[in-house]
Length: 107
Image (tube, rainbow, N blue to C red):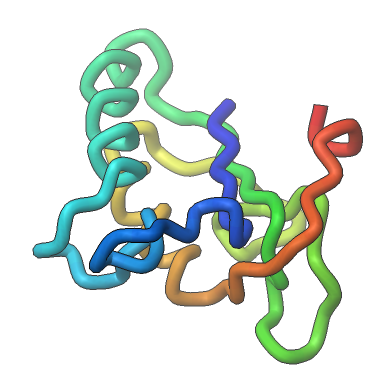
């Protein structure tokens, strides 16, 4: 299972402004993490559950979600492990980072 923090706690004080970057050419620690997880686990588990938290899963409409499906499909949060990076970027394009994050609900 993979859970990504899409909240405002990812804002930075450097030129990037945020650890999340839709531009795939920019530095992005989350992308690097998804690539490492994919390489490490795709042989053991061809699919994984992909969730996000701390963002509006439907921009400008919903409140901050403590936990939402990273695929955008409420009934199916399963992605192929070797597609985690693409799923991360697709989710990033569809959510609006926000606060607060209630970690007790996530755990």
